Length: 290
Image (cartoon, rainbow, N blue to C red; front, side, top):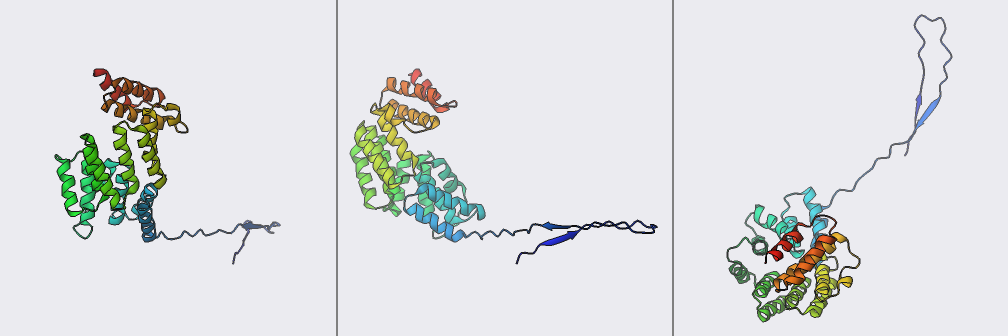
């Protein structure tokens, strides 16, 4: 029941006065104070929803859910591991490494999961002297982990061992896990082989599985740039993102020995970026030094 409180304002008679003054008493109504009740945070339900998002390859949503849990429970181990795996899926390897290398985890039933996260984040951040051995060691105790097969495939791609890389990606797809990431890596393999139309098709396929993963769309646009479709590649995106994609395309061109094209793309990245693009400038200096 809402209650209204009435305040009476009065003036006391002065001491020593023979008569008291006439007093005008007027009621003043005060609006009721509405109590705002917030629902208690359900960490377990939020964690469960984030894990469902991760399993459905909605990695950005999953990361957001895990982050909410960590706000209330900073050392929640499932949320930490989920965040690390989400960072891996989104290609944010340094952030994943901070979790898997710098956090203190106890030895228990999640040890294999943590060990795989450490291997993957370490391989992508150059923390191993022999990354190929680290990957193979991981596959000994986790032969069904699609991400390890992807890491092995990328290792073969860097050595231009295209068929070995493809075999690894096919093996990863056979696990029926992390499909969008595997298909994206197949696209990158095709991109490095200058099979741009096929690469663009793979990136588009990965986007359909995980539409919120920007890196897949960035790679699709990069394949369009390298195939000469610059206008189509840069439509409907902000200048800072366009600059990043141009820089990445220039780096791929440079790796393929196309220094003239790389120089042009790095310069375009510098011209397009709304702020100073440090990476594009460094890459341009590298090309000029060649």
